[in-house]
Image (cartoon, rainbow, N blue to C red; front, side, top):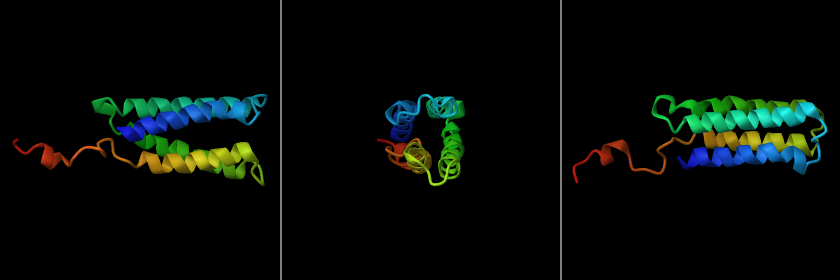
Length: 113
């Protein structure tokens, strides 16, 4: 589940990045970043619960949206949008990591000890 923890930490960065880059006066960017960060936290957190253990795959959609928004919102992209591109690409890598990546294979866990 370490991949989900990294996704949540990345969402925290995304939520404070408007203040770091000084664009908190732009309501679209501020609320867009906060909304996406909240959605990432919700989807990553839902992955801890058994019935919704695949919810982290929805982070892929959010990450792709961040990359597209960062690249095509303004040309050339200013630093806040470059941040969206980097965060989106990073989340694309993290979202494909399975929940049980740090555990031995399921067949090995079922062997008698």
